[in-house]
Image (cartoon, rainbow, N blue to C red):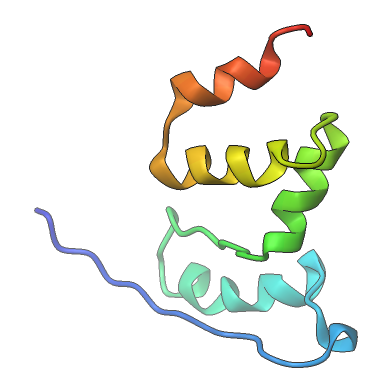
Length: 85
C-alpha cells in the first residue's frame, strides 16, 4: 500500500529554454493517458521563490532567512514575516 512510482525530468540550459506551463504539461500527458489521476508537476527554480518572496514585500536579509525556514518546513517561523512592523 506504500508503493508508488515516480519519474523525473531535468531541464538544464539557457534562460531561453525556460519552461512555460504549456511546455511543461507534456510531462503529465503520458501518465494521464495510462490512467494515473493523482500526478503532480513540480517546478523547482529558486528564482520563482525569490520572486514570490519579493512580491510579498521581503527584501535584503529577510529573503535568505525565509528560504532557510522554508527548507526546514518551519511554518511557525515563517508566520513571523507576516506580522506588521
